[in-house]
Image (tube, rainbow, N blue to C red; front, side, top):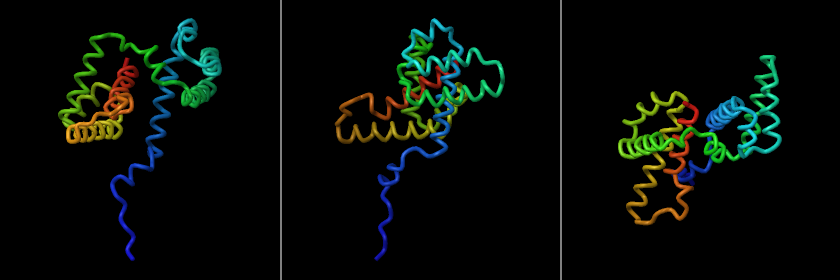
Length: 177
């Protein structure tokens, strides 16, 4: 008896790769570093738990390079449990409607052109990861094709691949500013 080869759907169940997890943690650490640049009164207005707030304030006090490096790693670890979307919304310079419109246009171009539009995004946002961006675009395009074939849209638009692509672009814009 020959074992059956895995279907394409079976391969998607493994979750993110170890390198994707590491890149995600580096992004969270970068967001934590951006938070640490804020003034204390601004930090207190953000939706932070007490432990993360204390770690951010402690980072401002440290002077030794190695201690700062370790504290940034600790902040990155604490950021895993923070509400990243709420922090990005509060911290984000994307309250600028013109920038939001630009991101919408970039999203539409990615959805229409796919890989051809990737180079523009990669040059505009240096923190962008080609693999992650391609994966988000591929999943969003596949989801759109499936919706067009069946005529059924997602019940919760915040769980769609397109929304995840939008969040990734917004995060890249926040890190670029």
